[in-house]
Image (cartoon, rainbow, N blue to C red; front, side, top):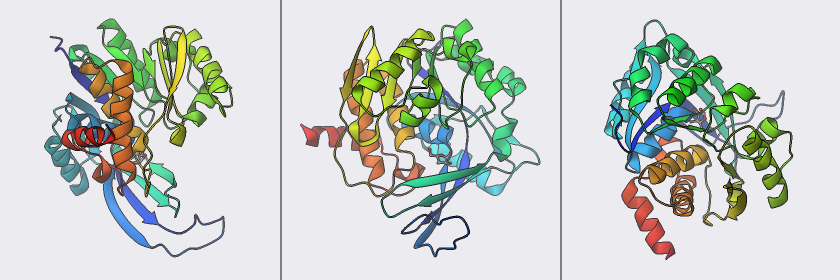
Length: 309
Ligand code: RIB
């Protein structure tokens, strides 16, 4: 039965191997790193953790391998207030891995081995369909098999579960997929790949948003890095600035934004307040290292917002 305010997140789980260095190596170059860390990540898991820590009632549909790190990640997810009954441990698979470089400016580049994430098949979505049917909203990204994301969106549509898509990493999507999405949250690059509009101003963000509305998406939020977010719905758009903080590491900033945003919307906060709440969560995250280690708890977000006045 549908539970008011319930969130389902569907997505990836990775063990992030993070190397901090002054500058990214060029092809053929070897550079010595400054600091190395293994942290829990994956866009799906980061968004689930951001929702769990910011107070959502959340279930997660995902896969880990049948390895030690998969076990530890599952336990951590439960500690982060996430219902993990639909996080499957896949036999003879290893947990997904992300290899991440972070440069001196806090920017990152990431390469992924899907591992058990590739086992989040349409059959497995079918097995967990009740989680989607019972939820008010389904939040997904694109580190899972695309046919499974489409199958989950169709199920959500059938059961009046709102579909929120964070289209990361950037992939071209079919009109069939986009028509099933109620809210989309691309960054500038992802929005350009989906719409063909190069975004370098509010005006171009508005044009990209119009293309996405024309595909059938009611709410479009294009994240613009330091410039904030372009929010477009009900025929009008506006830019909502973020908070100015000293960033040390932007890994999972977008994931934190997404998880916190949906949490606030499910609490029935008005959209502008929900974006401000999500901006605050992401601002805290960029001042810390790693993906999930950087994601703030609700008390920290509330305190940050109070300090901003
Ligand atoms: O968005 C950040 C995440 O992307 C990292 O945690 C990494 O696992 C990749 O999925």
